Image 1 (cartoon, helix red, strand yellow):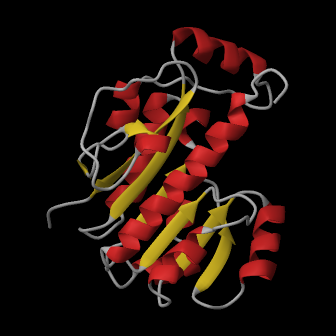
Image 2 (cartoon, rainbow, N blue to C red):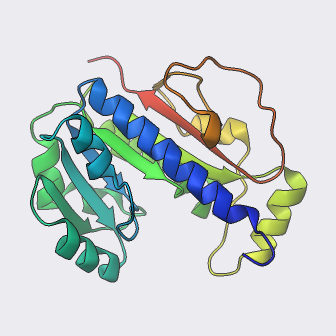
Amino acid sequence: MASTPKLAQLARENRLFLSRAVAWLAKQGIRQFLDIGSGLPTAQNTHQVAQAVEPGCRVMYVDNDPIVVAHAKALLRGGNVDAARGDVRDPASILTNPSVVALLASREPVALILCMMLHFFGASTATEMTAAFVNSLAPGSYLVLSVGAGDEETGKQLTSEYTAVTLYNHSPAQIAGFFGGLELVGPGLTDAREWEPHATAKPAAHTGRRILAGVGRKVGA
């Protein structure tokens, strides 16, 4: 935070994007949400936003941190909300979890949420992981995606400064590729703060550190 004070603002922009996307999806009739890499419960969680539109929405949170899952289970128990431990690097382990299986078994559309996850993986790995999840979803499902990015200069700076794990500075074209086979809605891939479901696409006006976000729909049989 000392070296990159803009991160707090970007985190808020990502959270607001997630809220707008979830509310819109619930209004489109989506009643099942699978939020992978959800982190510790905070204000305006996915289930709070979705159930404010339709109380019957079901939400499944998945995180690889056992402390996160323990807190989530204690705070979010009941009300069509559950949490389970799983690692996004192993999609099969998540997709075979009994709670996730129960969510997907109806073959009704699901909103899959992968927010602020894929910059921790190389482009080919991120593409493969995302495809594995999307392939398990029924037609009419959606992918809600946000990825941290930067231009060449700021991207290199952040990846060198942040040493907890490896960061990958994906290009907009690479991030768009994570939606492979999906139909982008609204403005397509854009800055998180500018995504609105009824907005139209426009050239990106921002440089430097940013969050690119989008929502894609799975079409076809």
